[in-house]
Length: 158
Image (cartoon, rainbow, N blue to C red; front, side):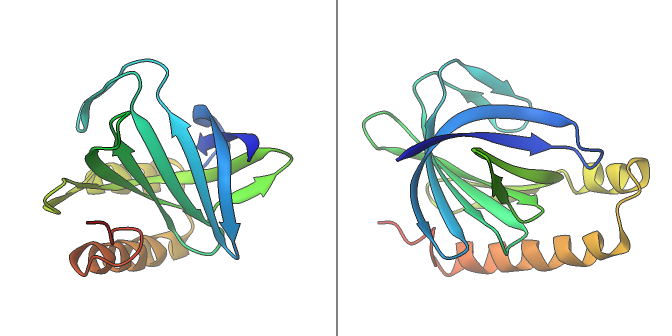
């Protein structure tokens, strides 16, 4: 497994969040990363993510979303966190994408909540997102919700 950094960027190219990860596998456009939280993170909508939380991260180079599976160190599923973003790019040890604000929080019982659609609208104006972003975000959200509801990969766990 190779060590990389993940860069979550804003549309203006600014790195918003950065973390280390290992490439677990690559299959065509799919990259599966292995990461963990070295320190506690407090998120206003997700809640507290405790230090030691393991994250299996699914990125695609041809899809407008990514999926994070958060679990305890002993493997208990905590939740899925889905992020609408531009397709990932892996270059020189850095996987980067533009975070487009809309998220889906999926609980272990597969109940789900769509978050931050208002933030997308605000940033679409602030960063002058290209018109195609709106269509791609809607399509990505629809696809994600279908995958969640039908328990398709990467939501096909027991």
